[in-house]
Amino acid sequence: MNNELRQSSARAHANIALIKYWGKRNGPLNLPAVGSISITLAELYTETQFSWTVSETDTAILNDEPDETGRISRFVDLIRRRADIDYSAAISSVNNFPTGAGLASSASGFAALTVAGCDAANLNLSARELSILARQGSGSAARSIDGGFVEMFRGVRADGEDAFATPLADADDWPLEVVVAITTRARKAIDSTTGMTDTATRSDFFEAWVANADGDLDAAREAIAACDFDALGALAERSCLKMHGLMLSTGNGLIYWSPATVATIHEIRKLRADGMPVYFTIDAGPQVKAICAPGYGEAVAEKLKTVPGVEAIQRTGLGPAARVIE
Ligand code: PMV
Image 1 (spheres, rainbow, N blue to C red):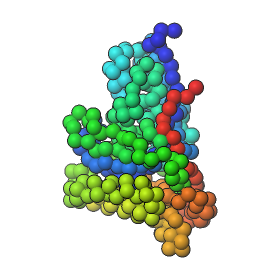
Image 2: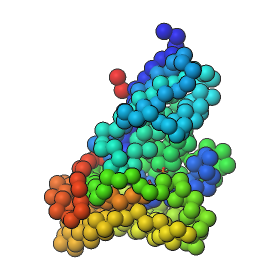
Image 3: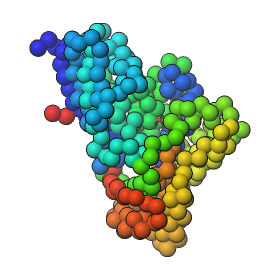
Image 4: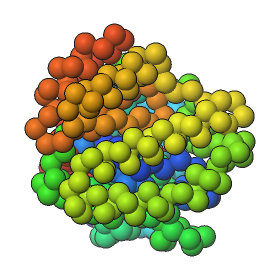
């Protein structure tokens, strides 16, 4: 087989931000207006098979459904350009977590696509280069290239070469646990790119959000270095609530929460008042992610199962970097 017609498969894990990214300083390049800090999740991942073919067009099957948006093909153009390849791509990608459950799959999806596509193209890129590439598929995908605790830099350059993610600590250094409370399986009403644009142009609070981000990042980095669970949990909860406050303050008033989201928040705060080491974070959707100190995932899951409106629970620890698989 011609070397350029290689195929490859990769696995990349989902991540959730503890210090949130919301807002872009450049749309097409997906350059974030703020840095972010995330944890990579062991039990939620995407596996992607990537082959170069001589067919006329790209094909991308995501969880048994063809991608009609052209988003995958536009992303593969970046790999083609970089590797100087003009073959088409045949891509098949599967999430191991429930599709349509409102769990962010673009992060693990674009990270797996980046790793498989670059390997199939014989591009030997560093983790930083992979992260810069993955970012152009989805901002949060830049963080799924690495495992454990990860920081994404906002960067200042117009070309985005300084907007990449890098590991802060390994999963084993501080094995936090996460319980995801799924409160509705409906697809989110407003996608994150539309929501971010709306926020940047139509919220009075956007400048304050950007101005405060670096302080939160500094404090979270310190909390991770010291394995200070209460400090990190409090920062994560506050960053989440600030982001949702920002969303609520846009022109259209973006409300991603369901009644069960709010009920779960209150349950987590009650558990904490009773001595359980748990904090929440929520992305652009109704699911609640409970961040638990090591050893507390099971007890928290048992409690969150009983919250009215919680449809399912998924538990996970922290996971590894994206990688090529057999
Ligand atoms: O990368 P995107 O476009 O899926 O945006 C992610 C935005 C949030 O999930 C809400 C926050 C974050 O930092 O992951």
